[in-house]
Amino acid sequence: MSEIHLTHVDTSSHSGLATLHLLGCRARNATEPAELGFIVANESFQLAPYRQAALWLRDRGVTTLSGISQPDLNAPYVQWLGSLCPILAEKAGSQPFQPQPCDLPDHMAAEWEEWLPAHGLWLPLTGPDGQTGGGLLLARDDAWHEAEITLLAEWIGIWQHAWHARTGSNMSSRLAATTRQVLDIRAHARALSPGQLPHTLASLRQKKRLPYVLAVGVALVFPVRLSVLAPGELVPAHPHVIRAPMDGVVDQVLVQPNQRVKAGAQLFALDRASLDARLAVASQALATSQTEYRQQAQQALFDAKSKSRLATVQGGIGEKEAEVGYLRQQSERATLTAPADGIVLMSAPSEWIGRPVVTGERLATLATEGDEELEAWLALGDAIELAPGAPVKLYLNTSPLDPVEAHLRYVAHEAQQRPDGSFAYRLRADLAEGSPRPRIGLKGTVKVSGNYVPLAWWLLRRPLAAARQFVGL
Image (cartoon, rainbow, N blue to C red; front, top):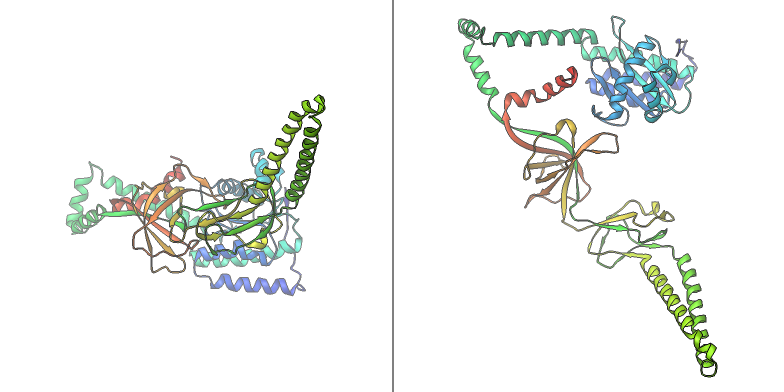
């Protein structure tokens, strides 16, 4: 374990100090804790480059990750960070700390290379009471310089003052307030127990609060529709996948992304130089065999030995004809055509030209115009009971006031890992008749409506789930 002691900032580094000043202004002007978390996890890069960043608070866990808007608490990476950061906070104390795998328990050290670059930097967050309440973990491939650490430590000091100003109290006092709320809830539960309920009702009558309590009780059993939100987009319902028919190199891209094409239109052309050379050799070999066959046929009239060789030569001709036919077919297949009318969905053509491909590799997707459906990814914590046909709405980022109506077709049985490392359930929904048909590829937020539940359950579902995870039940 190595500790870093702060040194005086080099005042000649005008660029770094100017950046520090600008970041400090941004932190002071931030209005929400979430905005402050985004600033420290993503914009600290202006002071010193890094590849990954994570903000960890002792009472909240991993709250912010660089590069994504909201971390998934069920993702393996986030859970590993949740186990790593308390260890770093204990070892570092109140000083910046460069953790090494040797400073960690064996099971944590073995997973370091899987999740983080080689060089980490832990910047502790301390409250007004001097207690460590969290920290910022930065990681990159290159070693950290003393000047960078000093500048980052100064920035963290500025940032945490803005954090305490926005949150109103330090972390330990918030934890104490939460504890008092739990004790109050227990007191209410005792007041509603069978033995204490008559005394509680009598007290409410004396204080003329019983009507209000009854009104709240009726409101809590009022049925409301349970709904969840998920990121979604419009995708082709029945796409035609254009795949490479053979191993080769893409020579030409004959269409542009989002271009409308007719059935039979040429889309891609693979390099045929090797095929043409093999076809020329095979054709020449076939012509030679045919000439040999004619010579043997003429000699067979006078020579019995030549007559016996005719069958062998004829078999060789058949083999070479099959090879020539196969190579001609492959040469024709080197030009990929559209199997139906539709819109070509693909990346930039420049990314494909000269690129080697293998048999079956996806080159593009051909979508039928007007044949769209909705795809969404439901987080593990939002996996409520959803029946086929449940109403679904897509609020597009480009048109949030005009939702696209749809009906749920299915929710995947197993969760799948997404590119950001989180796990989610794939959801597909058919667009409703008469609903607007925006173009394929537009993204937005999907609202999926489930069954009707009491208002009390609607309000307490997430807090109860969080409490269950916290206490380990």
